[in-house]
Length: 218
Image 1 (cartoon, rainbow, N blue to C red):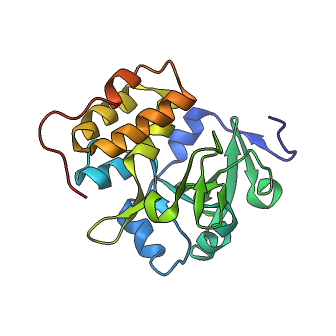
Image 2: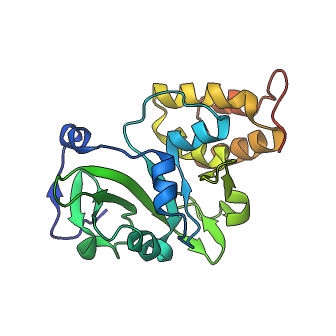
């Protein structure tokens, strides 16, 4: 990837020190009137799906259609935004249009703390397009579910698809935890996508197997 000018390096150590993540309820309160198709992503999304917090989270991520990001930014007028990628940070105005940079961190301009990570995702109208394979799509009506108290989150098979690339111990733990809760059509969808993107992934032997015992109904 060719990086835009004007960035500065940021190490994982510095990022960890500066992250002070909000909770999904705090984010949802700030975005209560935002019309964009936004949703909690990552590990927090799986917690919202499962109905319980599984572990501490180092950050909080939400996803939004790329062209709708200004509606998210408008809900946080007192904060600033940095685009992040490949170990560098850029001011949003400098790198917002770069097609391969999608992570956008909300920053407190006084303390320098990061509170929220926004993924600006490709889409076609009301249809989400996977940035790792544009043949993988879902209408936003299927991509996003909502908790009983009104917090939108990504469906678990999409979260797990993105987690599969890193395949860290915490991602394996996330799969084991939510797999018994997934109905077979979600498992089948995840299996299909993993086969397409990561044909040798170790999850393929596990993710497509029907859950043992009762599953949730939707």
